[in-house]
Length: 203
Image (cartoon, rainbow, N blue to C red; front, side, top):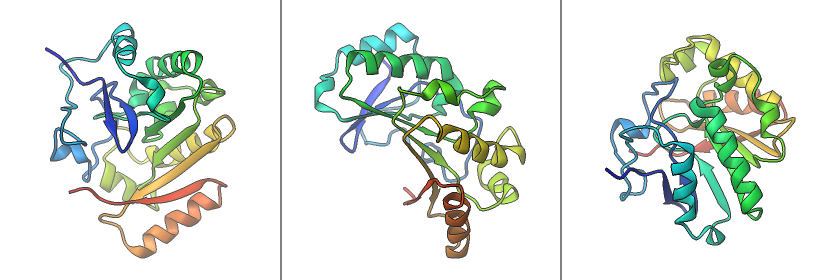
């Protein structure tokens, strides 16, 4: 059976490495949909192996894309080694490509080590879902397997990542959050010298 490893969304090429995630967010798109673009089912029968991922890229005309984004129906850094090795291969073979990871920022908790130095020279941008202005509220919304420690973990990850990645952005989804909380999140992020973005909720 075929599976969707790469898919197009908003002019970029996205990579679907896994359906596993350390969070179970109440607003996650996959709670209600099988696809983000209305075409490609992102539920995997199994996780693709490295050679399958590279073979999938080779079927694409990569010269038409500016960005490749690691983001599917799961947390890409649940497969940190595969993500980094795939990004390295892309940079070596298609140097025009810019590479972004969309993540919950829990990679260092998942791997039990600091993975951020491995991003240097390979990852151009990281987008981290912040979603709340406190650890308690984050846990209520995101239900991380790391509990209350997930929030401080993702903020620590973001600060470490900015040493090696040109653009690090933390975002909130405009859903189940007040305007006051959004501004609190903005302050938390900007005080750390990072970028902040509000994402629209997708029904």
